[in-house]
Image (cartoon, rainbow, N blue to C red):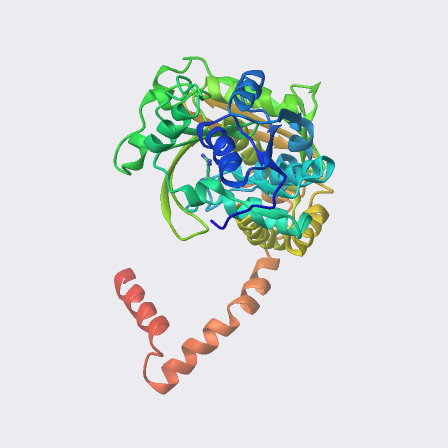
Length: 421
Ligand code: ARG
């Protein structure tokens, strides 16, 4: 890292964890600048007053947390529900969604404090540095960005040693995992979990019960959505934070919401990730269930692709880009009719959708039924199939006329015909 002799004031994105605390004396020693520690409350369970004290003990000139829980819930998590956002089909973007918000607050604080640089505690191997720095580039393109953990090259033990040498109490740094938690769930990394074959120990989980020990009675709830967003549980209206927490509590109690996956990081590393995201997985599944009832086939199929693009966009830290605006515009247009109720049952690690209804439902029981009262015009299917199969029939007849198969399809037909005779 180059010398930053001219810097007077640095605002550091502070979590209260080991790395960002060690970053305080490290930055002061390296630059001689004053360090302001700014944290953001996105619903993490940590004692934030104690974190502020730690920052002061480590040498910060100012330390505070900004309460952004409402903004996180409505501005970041709710759009993710509309987008059914699961990176690689599994990870509901717990950390990914919070970083553009935190980096945005960092940029705002730097302006308010008249700082000439900002810093974050991300390492060079992770995704979070990408999310921080792309957001900062978009919102504060002239601001100098320092990434001490990317440059100091400390192992965890060395960071502990460095911290101790600088009078930072490290007793609180005993948990065996690296955790990142917010309103949307909990990411658990490091230590024993780095062995991709090792089963996670029960002590890794805090939000979800071990399904084996979950209650013997199931729990059924009705979740109401309005324009793609959850608004009521069993008829009770709730705000964004409250509904996320309530669904998370119920699902977690029944052992639903654990994820164990190998994830492709932006930098090209595969990492073993363990998450517990009871609220996220339940809400996204319910939202999808309602969408399946009200969206047309074409919109539904294209939206699945747009949803994947949205998850990749959020994972890759492209929050403040024209891409997100364009994806949100498509998704927004699809949510007008996503209003209705989904019934879901939790039981020993599972969640099942057991019913759905909507004033905009395109499901017509009279057409779908195999029973009495069927209103489907079966005769119309004759003509429909004549036209639908025309191309396939033409191909088969042509192959027959040429006296040979055209590769795959005719050989396959011959094989099937032989088996069927
Ligand atoms: N792999 C996840 C992501 O990139 C979780 C990262 C958790 N971050 C952390 N600093 N522990 O979004």
